[in-house]
Length: 214
Image (tube, rainbow, N blue to C red):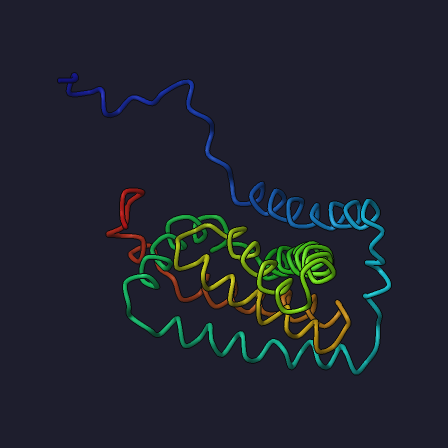
């Protein structure tokens, strides 16, 4: 048993909660930091990473178009009321909403651009590129997509969804041969999804979930 007032005390050794501005900075630095990591791997393995990233109006347009199936699937999942997706919404409402719910669109754009560049250079440009060389095109795509899913371990269902998203982006890259397409598609999708989530989630959505939930 504890004293009645003990619940009102705080642990002096507990870390200070992170504020939303710091969270944005950390998120951008982490995601952007994947780009030099990818370049380092590319240098070690002799992979011509930047040769696979070229600018063209056609591929810029393809990047915009490639966003549409992903965002359509996102909207469908937002409307499905099944427990694995409901749990993802509860976790995002509890963790993401306090950090990004009040941030300006420019912050969401910065995070999205950093994720699009960093994650695509690393997972598509390096991992998928190397695995395709070692295992074959589609086997490499499958393994790289699996790794991409594991990189997003929010819930088991989220890992599967992220893996499927990675497989889609990997297929787009195989078909277009230009990392610009998947970088744009990834960044635009992340921005649209973050914008939709921060406007549709509410604090009440976080109720009913706990770390022990299955």
